[in-house]
Every structure is written in C-alpha cells, then in structure tokens.
Figure (spheres, one colour):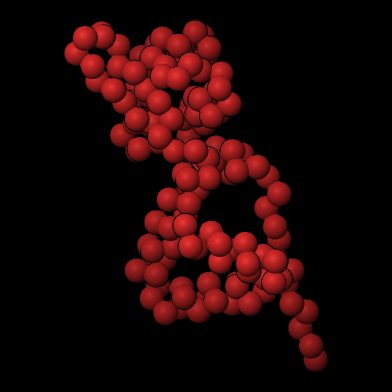
Length: 140
C-alpha cells in the first residue's frame, strides 16, 4: 500500500500579511501604516494617533514604545525635540526571518534531533524550486 505524499502548501499571502499575523492587532495596524508609507519617516506618536483616531493617545504611545522595544521600530530620543521620533527598523521579510530563526532555534532546543528530523522531512516534500528559494534565504 502506498501512502500519498502530503503536498507542501506554498503561502501565497504577502510578506506583509504574514508579518502582521506575528503581531498583536494594534501593533499590526501601526506597522501596516508604517510599512505602506502612510506615516512620515520618521514619525511621532501624534502622527499615528491622527491616522488612527479611534485609539486613545496613550494606547498608541504604549504600542509604539513596545514595537521599539521589540526592535521592529527604532527610536531617536533627541533631547532637543520633545517627541521621540520613530522609524521602521525591520521590513516585513526581516521580521519574519528573525522570528522564524528564533522559533526554529527554540524548537531544536526543546526537541533536539526530533525537531531536526521533522525539518528534514518537511524539506524532502519540497520541489526543487522551493528548495532553491530556501537555500538562498538561508544564505542571508
């Protein structure tokens, strides 16, 4: 009896969509605005609040600060200017890459060789074009 090999699904969603899924709902709204150029570069919390007026200013301020703490935004804490200025520090693909490497490392740390064997089994299911794309990603 032959068991059919499970088809490997390709995620056709955009990198931005996948990156948003890795964030909380408010973080995703703010980063979508930043990634798509709806916020100036650099921006201040007030810029975000104007764009998302349904949110309390303090909620926006806290969420933007958390995005900076996570390294997704960078912050310039200039003493000359009252407001902190923020910039995008990670593009969607960079966020996905950083978090996926961390997740893979945690899986290996937790499950050891079993995790590596599972990764290898998943790689075996890929077609040559997918393998080549992954090889290029791994070389970054």
